[in-house]
View 1 (tube, rainbow, N blue to C red):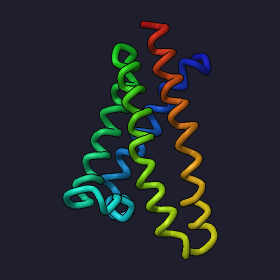
View 2: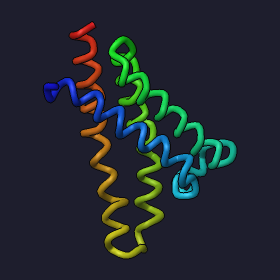
View 3: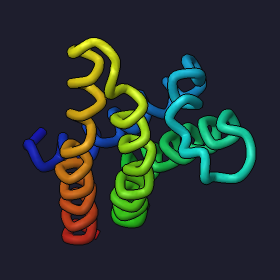
View 4: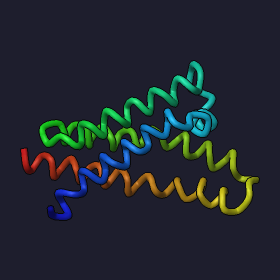
Length: 126
């Protein structure tokens, strides 16, 4: 299996792991849901977990890979405000936690680019 063949599966695995985490440990995700969003944070936590699981499944299947990978890129952009909220909320925490919260911010760009790359690869093979 070539590196380009593994990339979609790794992205699917990342999304599936994140999706499961939203159900296994929802409180940590509830805390970073921006207050501006309507409704209960837990609803947003579970909804985003479902979306991540659906995108993971879509990326794992070559026929739906392109659209699911583009959806993942949009998701990575869409969750950025939660990462900003986390960085702001954690600004007074111990240095290791603060570093994690701040480190998540620039990580979004490579995730978006990775998902777009998987979408392009899926398109080339379709």
